Image (cartoon, rainbow, N blue to C red; front, side, top):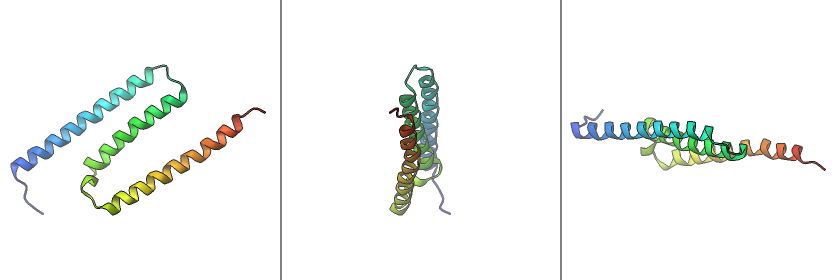
Amino acid sequence: MSAHTPEEIRKETRTYIVVFAALATLTVITVVVSYLDLPTGAAVFVALFIALIKGSLVVAYFMHLIDEQRVIYAILLFTLVLFIVIFALPAGNFADQLRVD
């Protein structure tokens, strides 16, 4: 285990505080957006976009993946693509069911 200087600790603490403030701000934005009169599709898109940003901040800073190697990023990218495909499949079937002939 390597020793950290007081300056490194202050810098890391400052980073955590900034990330916490960003997460708190994004949470407030999520609540504000929930009160807007948006169509359902747009509301879901905005909520998922904000959740994606918040999740990325948590993964990058609190799980320390910002310093990881490219293999981790490749696995995360594959997981993201698979996640999108899995959620898109039922959405496509649902749209087909709504179609009136």
